[in-house]
Structure formats: structure tokens, C-alpha cells
Length: 129
Image (cartoon, rainbow, N blue to C red; front, side, top):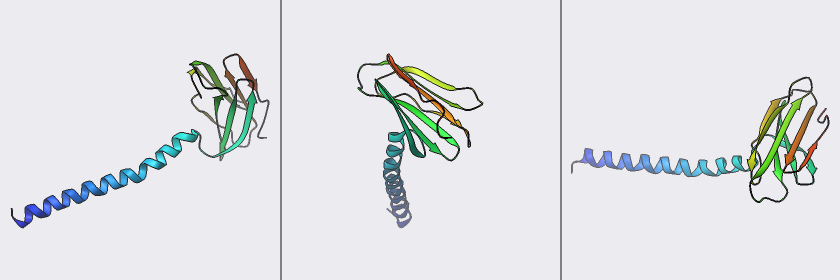
């Protein structure tokens, strides 16, 4: 083997090692982001008999999801977020533990969130004013 072939193999090996190291560093950040579901900080929890609505705010964006009190078999769950003066943005589906997130740009407006897990439900009224 000539010295050029050895350099190419070493270069390829180094590139693969660098790429795998970068992927290993990126994985924990992705896992952390998937755990919270919403960007920003948690500003409110709206509890009800079968679960709660978790509300997050980042700048003027409000994000929410419904979390079941007792995860179990799939059941109908719903979440909705409405900025005052605008239509609500709803989501409904069958889940075991939590719904998808729903986000709206509210700016400085009040918002109303609603959540449902099975037969239990609750609306917050106007909050974050």
C-alpha cells in the first residue's frame, strides 16, 4: 500500500469517528426536547378530575397539551388554546398519556385553554392577561 492510500483510509476513518461523535452529542438534546413537548417555560397547570392541561409560554407564543392523571388504555383526549379575539385551535385524538401540543401566537392577549381526558374536562377561563 502506498502512502496516499494510507492517508485516504485514515482520513475516512477520522471523518466517520468525528461524525459519530457529533451524533452522540446531539442525541441527548433531542431527547430532552421531546420530553417537554412545548418550548418556553411552564406558566400554568389547569387540573381536573382525570388529568390536567400544561401551559407553556415562549415570547408571545402559548403552547399547551393535556396530560392524563392515570395513563392506561387509549381513550379520547383533547386540548384547545384560544387567544382572545381569535378562534380556538383544537386537537382531539385517542392517547394513553398525553395529547399532541397546540400552539397559538397570542402576543399580549389573554388565552383560554381547555382539556379533556375521557369523561373529565375543564376550561380555564381567560388567563395570562
